[in-house]
Amino acid sequence: MRRNIITRFSLAAAIALSAPIVTYAQDIHFTQFDMAPLVINPAFTGNFDGSVRASAIYRNQWASVTVPYVTFGAAVDLPVLVERNGDYLAVGLQLYKDQAGDGNLSNFTGLASIAYSKSLGQSNDVNRSTSLTVGLQGGYAQESIDLSKLYFGDEWSNGTFTQGTSQEYHLGIGNSINYYLVNAGLALSHGGQKFSYTLGLAANNINQPNNSIEKKASSTDLLDMRYTGEVGANWIVGERLSLRPAVLYQSQATASELIAGNEFHYQVGGEPGYENFSTAVFLGGWYRSGDATMITAGVEFKGFRIGVSYDYNISNLNTASNGNGGFEIGIRYIAPNPMKFAGKRTIPCARF
Image (tube, rainbow, N blue to C red):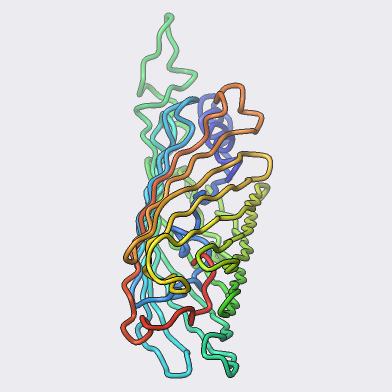
């Protein structure tokens, strides 16, 4: 989130000043959040038009300020049981690794999700339907830090630092911590021939695990819950042109994030009206409140979506960063569902 850099710098400062360590860890975020839907809401598991979805994303940020913060993500999800009325049971797997700063503060997380979608009925038009989905997610995380790359106040002697002398030991700092995560979410989706939308609400880190890296038995640093609200739409405004606006809000501890914007999607190949698996280009403009303006662009073809994005920093860090924020590149593949491939727009799915 937009305070991640401040949070992580605060960790290093707290260690260096030999003060009691109190950190407020926060979850990762992506500009192209549609490339990592299971990070946003477990109810988005299986919420797509196809038989299986696989994606990967890479993010690099703050390279102009410090050692780059690098995040990798990969996911796969698919419906495993589908009823004739549109109900389905889906499963998914989300992996990501985040590494930040001089001390290689690292977080590796694996999440398994399951979602059940219940059809709320179809109109006489087969291309119109509404569904409600509930999703659950559980996973395992490991956080670590490389103490050998950090400097402590009492290691300064005779005008130079002598690493590994004492500070990290009497502070009782460990190199890593492992913990489990529990997440849950809801999603309401509506699909139409010209307009579709998805609404989602999620609560992450429900079990609020202890992620303190201090080795003392009494050390407690609970990972705060992250609340997420999202709405995305797909509005067909011409034979080949569609608008895909979205708003994402996340709140965790004292940090919050609000992203809003729109993607212009233009079909350049295939028969007009058949968006799925046709060739298209897209260009989007986005705003992250108080932090950055972002641009996204890319192509879609034969079920693949390849997108890039760039964040221009407008926060108080702008002077130090020269406006440079984060760069992302993501790729997604959705395998067609043979039973629905001939349909035009039959699945209630916005950007997901």
